[in-house]
Structure formats: structure tokens, C-alpha cells
Image (cartoon, rainbow, N blue to C red; front, side, top):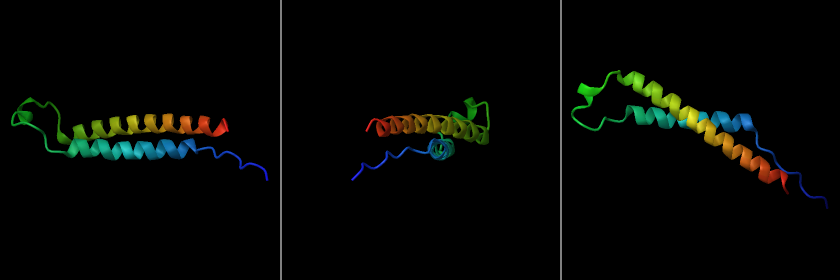
Length: 80
């Protein structure tokens, strides 16, 4: 009986899934209620801008982490 071939992760799916999960987390953080009474006086941008920036940052970080995970899984699968 021959050994099973190693399964290689689909990097594109990992990156898209990580970016979408990061986007959801970033938007969630952007939509949370701000923490202090002086928030509306010190902020220089609107709530929609904050949600956009945090969503983009979350997507970037999520895609990066998913890419690292996919590379690690790829390397561990090929060593067998």
C-alpha cells in the first residue's frame, strides 16, 4: 500500500478567507461604541471613515496571518 500524497493548501482560498474574517473583525471594532465622553470632541473623522480604515486594516492583517498559516501548512505537508 503506497502512502497517501500530501495535501497542499489552496493559498488563494486561505488569503480570501483570512481577508474576509479580518474585514468582519475590523468593521466590528469600528462599529463598537466609543469609550469616553470626550470622543466626539477629539475625533477628526466620521464613524464611516473609522469603519472603513479598521475594516481595511483587519482585512490586511487577516490576509497576512492566513498567508503565513498556509505557508506553514504547505511546508509541513511536503516534509512527510
